[in-house]
Length: 193
Image 1 (spheres, rainbow, N blue to C red):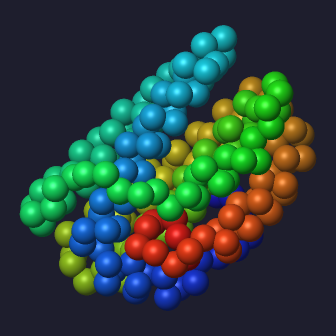
Image 2 (cartoon, rainbow, N blue to C red; image 1 turned 60 degrees about the vertical axis):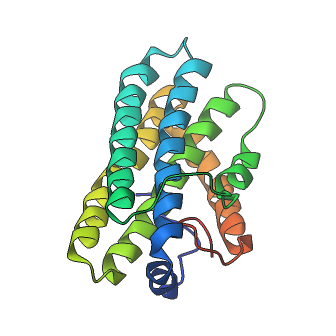
Image 3 (cartoon, helix red, strand yellow; image 1 turned 45 degrees about the vertical axis):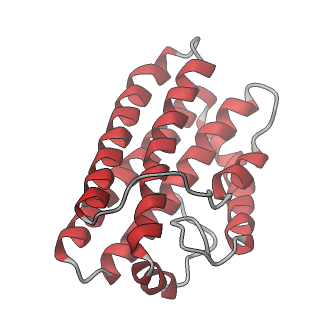
């Protein structure tokens, strides 16, 4: 797994659990949907990269399955899915993506990997703080998927852009991601302070 430079304060988990319904769960549903859209977006942006197609198609389907799982949790809790102001994490993180190729592809894959890594870290904190065994099980189950998705993006970056390019660019994106996380406001979102 990518080493996140800035670890989330463990107190985030307790705060998130207090605001689980509806804020964190709604935010989580939106993030799963956005993760699926991001994978599909890469497939459309890079139709000339056949190595992306099958892994990202599978990843998008899995993200949508997670979206449906979270929708079911919302429904059981009487919460209607609806609009929610995003935290700004992904948008701010994406500002590091270069505009010219091949840097753009490399950066887009690594940014996606960092998003998955941060989600994995946050889901671990949620799972550790939840007292509801069903929800704790859900988040523990999602941890493996988030870690796998992170690995898929890193693997694709290494395959398509080369290990040296990945190793050279990782420190810059890791530093940027840490700055983004530190600057996020404290609010009930998976990607917040």
